[in-house]
Amino acid sequence: MSRVAIVTGGHSGMGRATVELLEAQGVKVASFDIHGERPVDVSDAASIEAGMADVHQSLGAVDILVNAAGMPAGSPIGGEDFVSVWDRTLAVNLSGAMLMVRACLDDLVASGHGRIVNVASTEALVASPNISPYSVSKHGLVGFTRSLAGELGGKGVTANCVCPGATLTGMTELIPEEHRAKYAKRHIPVGRYGTPEEIAHMIVALTALEASFVNGAVIAVDGGMTARGN
Image (cartoon, rainbow, N blue to C red; front, side, top):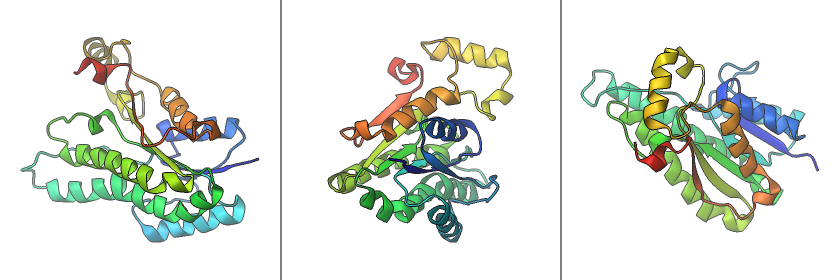
């Protein structure tokens, strides 16, 4: 049985690694990304609707939804741009996931084994200063995941949340290597940053048919950073 997946933010980083791993397992995958060949903006319901029409025509009904699209954002609470940063960050990181779930919901339920994996962050488990729009969006994604688990579990749809820690993506690769090494030594028990592929393996594991009893889980993939408590 061939399954169909949508991965948002699938053009790069963890999203791209997830697309590649799913495809390697024989899953037919559509990437929804503003930088894709057919751009989809997850904060725009009309853009999602057009993307869904393409998926249904080319691949079929959706069995798996991975919400990996997100944007980093920071602004102090008193910053002049705080409200605009807040609005845009929640629109992409939180409302985007909600819009995608609603767009895929009928397919996921009809599948009988629908899978939703939301990609949050360790900022969903702790909170750092000056980035409250980002932290709030990720905390909200955890709450949304747990609500979905309770609401959809009886319909055969599971919802789980992966919380990556420091990971080598396009954004973090801009940090000088010596600074990354110092941070990892101080804060991450395994002593290094993670890779997008390591995050993707956890995401994809949660999409497996065999993962049918994993529902409402919030899993840190951070080398032990949050376990250490710093």
